[in-house]
Image (cartoon, rainbow, N blue to C red):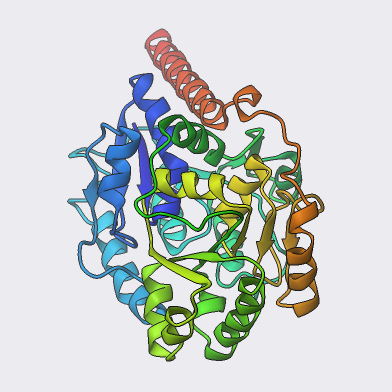
Length: 384
């Protein structure tokens, strides 16, 4: 049995291809959702065609603030470790069962912790990424360090992230030759979903911001809006508003700045397939999301990363610019758009499937466990 624990929308997008590969090979899948995010999750499962029925640990409000984390984490931990745990499936966990956790969220830490407590093999997907700065991104960098200690298998998206785990001697690190997001992107590009609303004519940029350090601090958010307004003076911007981003813009009294500026085209968060269509249509993207950084590196799209540090190497030095919130870097990025075509990247259809590499590894481990069990049983009979 392979338990897959997912908390956020980004995790589901990146894990959906792995789940599909497990289902295709008829490997048992137990899909557990922590409820950290809930909006559009059911639609994502349907869009990707995931057949496994999810078990929900939490169905109340989405977890969008640190004040909600402790009670939510405690409730999920209790449910996962109690007698009726969704990880038990009515029986004691079998030797060799695995739990897959992804990335760097509180759900990742929850799954890794519970997996160790229940004697499951903990496999961490998108492992080994580091910014080497515990405050940027916060708390994700700390979460990853904790999960590295709890996991037994690390599926790393590249050789660099794999090398970051050399000091963790009990952790088996495997290079998946790409992020599972590559497989999700392939699926989305094949679907070619139309956009729910029209976009500006000519060249335009897309803005997507949601990180804690950007939207929960009034001064930082004001600084980012100042920078965006300078970019919007040159190019219209389609600003995709995450629910938490919209709430904080309203809370700090900044929504009117966007609503009253005709250069901003405000859009609610859309489905993943539609969002990929939007990214493809744009001339450039301004984002603080690590997943966006990866997607855009595969697409070769000019990208301004609204962060001080990143744990990913994707696109850096080619078409991804780390802003550091510096006006000079933002303006230089904008001024070069006219002379900066999409970067040359290998066709994504020619790249290996990270999801297949992950499932190949899990299948081989399962086979090894069965062989070990048979050998042990044989030795018992031989000694009787």
